[in-house]
Image 1 (cartoon, rainbow, N blue to C red):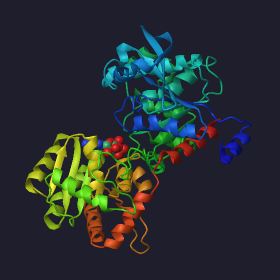
Image 2 (cartoon, helix red, strand yellow; image 1 turned 180 degrees about the vertical axis):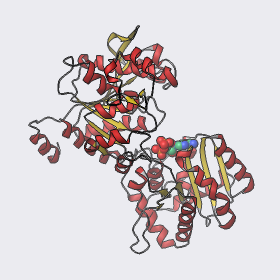
Image 3 (cartoon, protein in one colour; image 1 turned 30 degrees about the vertical axis):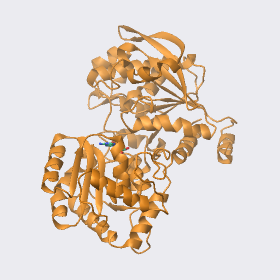
Image 4 (cartoon, rainbow, N blue to C red; image 1 turned 90 degrees about the vertical axis):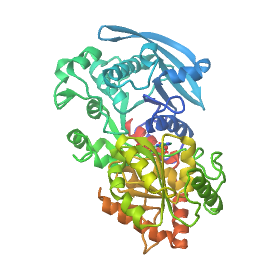
Length: 492
Ligand code: ADP
């Protein structure tokens, strides 16, 4: 055990590291739609290396059953009461890469999509919440901390503290991680009353309600023992009305218990020196392979075969969050005045997709818009590009900029959330930095920053130094795991 942890534990009068049960709606590689799955998958593995027994509890989604059914062990079952419903809940156990995962089985709720949308999704996760709480006392594992994630599991601390008094281990602590505050789980009084049997006295502004409706994430923010978000900057941003989506009062009230821990990326999956998806490998000291990747990307995407031209890229969901208003505002101005290429890989809002398709037509050979999702192509885009644009309106953590840096593509980001915490802007006087950034959500600031990057591109020494800084920045999950370990110990 690390000396630091030993000392922290001594202050708490304990000698054992906390045991953690991580409750999440999705967990990679079993089920995945976004970053939450990556955290749920990677964090327990890194915690295990620190000596912390962290296990996961997640729904036994159809996609998991299809692939892993022959590897799971049935532990026990019980029935969950959701209003008038009396639903089967099986607890299955799967050990993957040394991590124990408890799967909550119910064909009706988890036999189809991971998220069904609307009230159907609310019902899925009210069931899951209840099943987790009912399962905990019967598991072959007694956690000290239940680590909840986003609104889907945010009602766990609320229900534990209002309905399970005496029925739960008294000193069980609850952590809530907010991965994206834009999703809160807002339902009607009747729905929540029916599903979870919440007492009427909690449907007030002091407890569950926000703007007259019960709000799951708000309940979690009030009743969890500690709250964290996925970057330090996002942690303070969400205490302001600009970013909080209405939750600033609650979060300001809980400010002392709110912190930010940046996510990491899987350094094995994203490794330019051993990536099977690339035509050539490269590393910080040996960048020849990167030029081969750039040529391959240009050829594959119908861009002019020019090693000397700066290639800008985006790999993204095409939504307002990702700063597409800014990109659409300045694209013509840049493409019209600068010698540059642009490669977009993304899908999302039709208006942005159509804009980019039309731009591809206008700038044939210089701009490619690949509308779609392709994990395989994304690796080549990261490896083959010189710069990576991410001018987000808000960004809780952001993984793409970290992946881009690992592949030597210099990020150009807006200073918000995790982008602010991971990208150090180039300082022309000291030579420090691993990318470029701008402060305000403003198209002209983005354009100026792109132009600054273009100027640097002409200076080989500056570029080599910046690429080197970007590639050596450590974004492994080990650092996040240490921060989580400290937080869990603080909670004991
Ligand atoms: P968010 O979770 O908000 O979409 P992140 O930057 O945290 O943004 O993570 C996005 C992840 O999804 C990255 O790994 C990125 O490479 C990947 N991604 C996004 N869009 C695409 C796409 N169209 N094709 C392939 N991968 C994509």
